[in-house]
Image (tube, rainbow, N blue to C red):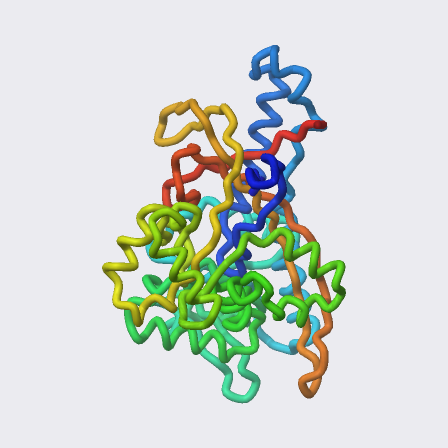
Length: 378
């Protein structure tokens, strides 16, 4: 997000909100919305006053559908190149039941099928143990579709669009299903370790002021300094020195208004903002405080625009959040050696726009809307 630093004379800079490693959604719909805006421009649907601003060059295409599908196809190909099996192969989407975001996901499935000739199936945690099995010696994961019980597929890649929240695990069977999938030889998008790497606590450890941990992953000082500049300060709420500072900031109504309190949750609708923080912490046992992180609020400049939500056009001040998708495929090193990066590329973008008065921004949670970029020279 663009951040206005009023202490520096209202200078603008770019700040990172978070880094997601599981179920990064709306890649399918982002391309379609960008295409919608390009189509509206081509039929002169925008006011004449916007003519100098809106044109083919200023409305960039989002390549999230082909590039996200390409990432999954690269994983599928890497698996099949090293596997010998008498079964046909597939990519298995792990989805929620019921799945509200199915249309977004379908675009990736269609692209995998049409462009890469990769068969895909959808399955919820309820069906994992019933419809899949592991070959004991090879750990190959075999999926048998309920509608074709005579035919099994070897799963090359597991694409998790569910499993990021505790609410996705409503029984011990669901936890057993996740373990069952993790034990398989299939490539996971993400694996459990990659899933945890995107958690709020890991982001806090990297972004706490004067944290030494970022240098472990970016030993080049110029690179680490440049990345560190994009971090909004994030603090623990434990009893460390940084945690005690954060507790003082969070419980003081005058300073709490500059922060957001985040639990280890994804999907939107979980955070506590600004003046609500002191009262929330007061209602929470102090032993639970370390489960949260305290992040300095990003203050983006508002702009005038219109949003189409719930069948209505709503006009007023809005703020935007830009997400950049990426695909990364790596191979573990032998005997604990360095990993080999096989693929690492940018995979399109998502712009989410919401009313300036809304703290939350999740589209699936009902707060934001899918949008596209309009680039201008300044």
